[in-house]
Image (cartoon, rainbow, N blue to C red; front, side, top):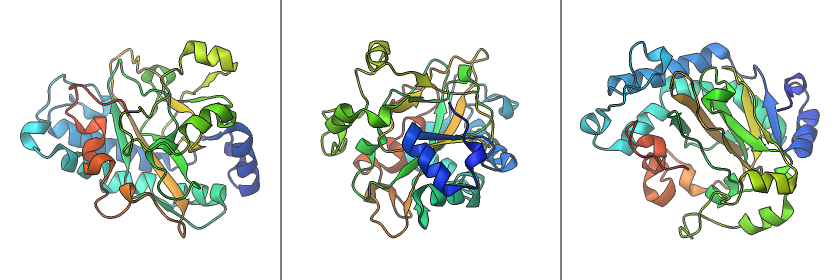
Length: 283
């Protein structure tokens, strides 16, 4: 990925770079200590249900879980983890707000829903456009991906498809598709494998991320994650947030004090809401 952190103080330059590349990779854009505090908070909650071994900071899974036993409402439990004060402070704080406002050139607000991911070794997220999951409000939405901790390429970070914001024919096939209104059609781009990338003459772009880094992109930038191939088997933690102009309509699935999420299941719609080690939804 191209590091655009030198442009942080120039909103016009940020907007031009986003239009050109389809993403913004910003090193050190967030407060590192705040991000690490969020990581500590999440791992502590997961350790409490027996999923993370001591010391929790190593993020090594135990292979067992008491999550369902201790918290029968799995969606409510994951909501409490995702909306923990340290997580909210790191991902919805003033640093992220300023960046989103500069990129959108407007007063902004975040979606209330927070997409917290805990990705086991051997797993990844398939390539997709965010539009299909959140298109009932304004299209002036940007996603911000935040690693909770240092995430090397081997740990399975975010990856974007180079130039995909200009794949007009592919974008046209997904524009207007709503995964909740048409659940028979998958949200991810099923054909987006090696042959697809070679046909498009596009590279898969990623980086060794550090706590405090972020990547921002539009609803029509094709992205997913690299396989978590951590040599130690550690869990990769990250958060997706979405920002939009405050005065424009917001997709009701992600708004309010208790967002209803996909299918009205709230945080239960996330794969990470399932006990660590159980089969996860790749969404």
